[in-house]
Amino acid sequence: MNDKERLENMSPLGFDLNGNILLKSEDYHWLMEQAERVEELKKEVEKQKNRKYIKMRQRDDFMKKAQRYKQALEFYADKENYFLKQRMTSSFYTPIELDKGEKARQGLYYNPTVL
Figure 1 (tube, one colour):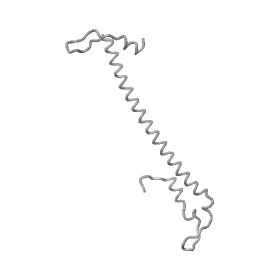
Figure 2 (cartoon, one colour):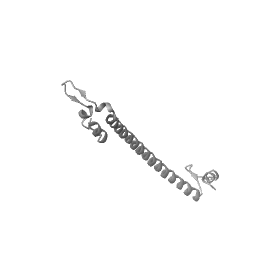
Figure 3 (spheres, helix red, strand yellow):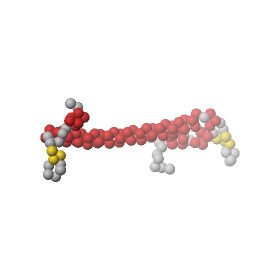
Figure 4 (cartoon, helix red, strand yellow):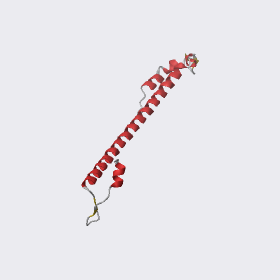
């Protein structure tokens, strides 16, 4: 007999003076085991929720990191950034020279606490 059938076939022996249902000892112990199992399952569900939250945070962090890498790579891959340009001071520079690797460092060593 499965658990559902056992629960459906359970019948009280009667009531005590306080109106509490009287059960067979084996039914009482089975119900207590079921209640313990429910508590264990609730704890397991909570653990799974926490794991899922952690995985989602890790995925989000990975996606942000990938985006920073992509932006840095796009900057260095852009051929226009290697052509000389003139500043207001009449000196010539390339955006790559002006950057001096800053975009790469930002992509690699991003620290969200430092703004």
